[in-house]
Image (cartoon, rainbow, N blue to C red):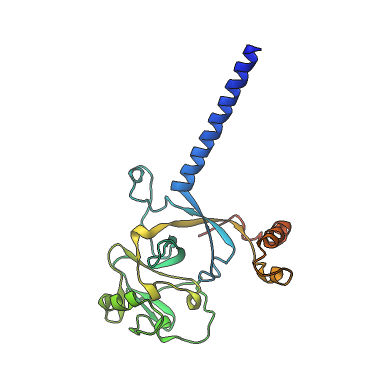
Length: 248
């Protein structure tokens, strides 16, 4: 009986050790390797849609930690999609595409983006409005009532030269792929390098919105009904063609 009790205790301790090891590994991965992120707005359509759930590669660009010397990483490049802390409110996470890197001269002329005098080829860009906006589509136009933040309106002037915006060292200029529906660097300025969390790696799940369907059948704010509806219709509302899709 004593031997059985000792064996049971050893098995229990072994199971506990395995569980703790798994938890430690999971915490390490979540803290340093990948991070889950949900697309909250239409600003990156049609590259990323509302309802896409992403895994963000936090090691792609390094982070100033000791292991940066041992793990290969690369610099942020023009054209990369990045997740970052919103400079105006760092508690929020934004996802945009890098258009200008340090030293670049950026200009928009009738919706075409020019960097260092060369027009970018951007097959991923979407325009949802037929109307041209002087500030948004011919940037940088120094207009004080175009919707840009007050601090950016004051700062932008010192970075404009010959109708081009010069990206300073340590900062990046980002735009949403859905150019007419994106709150981006045109309106609030540059993204500091330290704000960049990483690069989206994978859409691990994608689900279409069911708000209209639910609102027709439930009372406003009925979270229990919303949860039950999503669970019971999980197979139908999942965008299977986007689930487990790598992000280029």
